[in-house]
Length: 117
Length: 306
Image 1 (cartoon, rainbow over the protein chains, first blue to last red):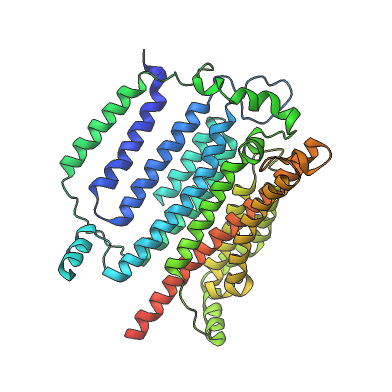
Image 2 (cartoon, rainbow over the protein chains, first blue to last red; image 1 turned 90 degrees about the vertical axis):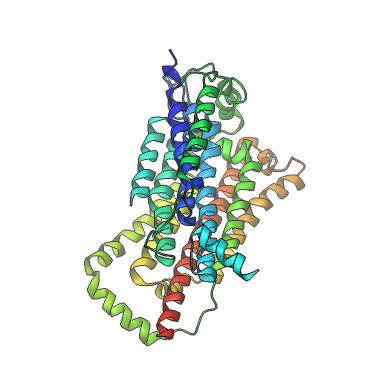
């Protein structure tokens, strides 16, 4: 009955995997990996919403009546490139944290912060 | 490695969903550059994983509850692939039905990206540019004068190590660059456009600098020049908007760029795609160069200490 909704369930499962990695791991790089998975689940969410049964890719051709929705494609295509740029920024921050603290484990960083204060 | 496979897998998923443009981007970004950056960051920080998970059970409960709530929320959503979902009846029909007369670009994704929602795309390009500036601010190191003899010695030793790889890559790189340009200018007629072309172009440069060393690559493509190009791309994009403003249209209204509205649209889309391509390519190159430069700098320092 609800089988037509399976695309959303896959998205939710992926999203929760990413979410779990973000909150459960102390390693900053792993947190970023979790964020990337979370991000991909949102991409899949948008793209699967754009799909129309019997539709084809949104490139105009003769004798084609149904196209999938081009708008989510546009949003996600830019979001992917923006995503990699922001991930790179996050990784850069992590590298600097490693240089300053000698660790990328959240708890060790916190400990060092507390001892210096 | 897994994340590369993940990227490729989601790319093929997007093809199955009829989103060829998105698949293109994901294939070049997810399977190529993001994996590479992750590797670089991991080697720069620590390979050994001694992570302590804090309160995994609590986290698991939070995740399961959130997931259950989200699944409950999806029960009201339209079914997968149904044509009468709210998303398909709002602005999409206008894009699909009218864009051939208004813009005349076969690839609807490009026409929406470049013309209807040019302002959004401008914002995205500025975000990418800002991220590039951020990486530059965080990771750039003052360069020491380079010792040419040392580089040449390194080059020779690497030449012996990866001989086959280097020769194959040397043959491949012109084709990758050519393909990037094809993707850039063919974006109106098929899947492609500035974002994908920029990433592919950057991938070629990154491949080169991986095999031939960063300092060799820096001699070919100098970094201040790349930074200038990144800014130039944003400037080009923005000035197309300003020019249409000066000609009496709205911001990013390309109809006024030429006597014939459709020709004006073509010109506008071509120019902003060029701006996007320049910025994306150079920002990706800047990001990679700085990560790699930081890594080599760190290694040099470690050697100096010993």
